[in-house]
Image (cartoon, rainbow, N blue to C red; front, side, top):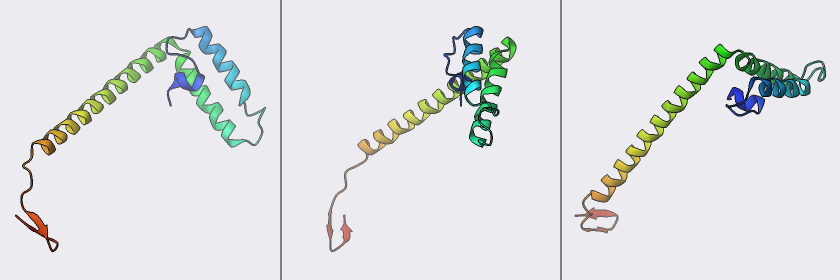
Length: 109
């Protein structure tokens, strides 16, 4: 999951907004407030990791670059899939029509 989504902030959020979102979310699922709740503990670790990356300018810059690269790669994969789908549709449209008929389960053509 995207670190910005984990903290519930937009990618354009300031460091103060990130810190505020972290404090609110971390307080809700802190292990001391939820003793024995493994899901809350895992969520707290995820929030902690997201804040660790986004609170340091250098780490945040590297993260943003990697996210942008992943999004560009995903867009390329989508474009290729769309092109392949268009090629298949064109091939199906341009194929010769079947001749003959089916008689007793056998194609006669």
